[in-house]
Image (cartoon, rainbow, N blue to C red; front, side):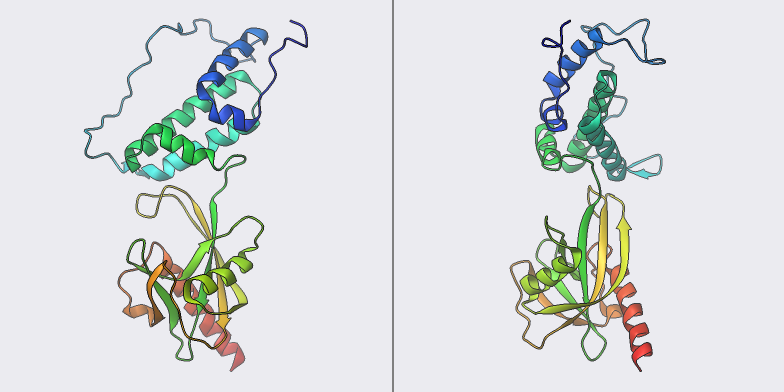
Length: 268
């Protein structure tokens, strides 16, 4: 085959968004390349042979949230991350097919867990191409003169949590936390110190993606609290009085209280 007629590798974005065409082109590439050592198949499956039925069952109303002790969403998150990163960077047609099959498994699992059709799952994942990493958020720990911490009552799940938000493109996490404080409670914040960086795996309780939370202790200028549409209420709390926490925010709040007390001891 001449260089002009050879099948050229596609970008990761093309591979991800066109799974049917990608499999066809991967098969064409296989005819032009010798199978790598250890990957050749003496008896390839006929293209007309039916695929084996999935071994799991789904009754239409419930599904298993764990697989051999592993949280199902944590498993799906890991699978889709491996598959999408592989589809972005791999040029080997055999690997491309394997990553595509892996992505299909993750999409099917996400679809059942979140009650979404497969095409919606793929569209959502397609918005985040490239090397797949955990989502990054920034959280603000703000204290009053009674050492109580500022919490917001969230409109999305009616729980209490720190002022927080996702780090947007072009922002540093410190800039994110200042912006979120202004947007959510109408206060002007200054970052005092980085308290901790906390990882959280995807799981059925917290959500379908791994998260890294960057926790800052902040001070705020005097002013009245004005809640945005993201919160129904905001006030300072003794954390032992809060019973309805958002995700892992109790853990973040306790880290912040410990850091705040250490700072007070140093400054006293």
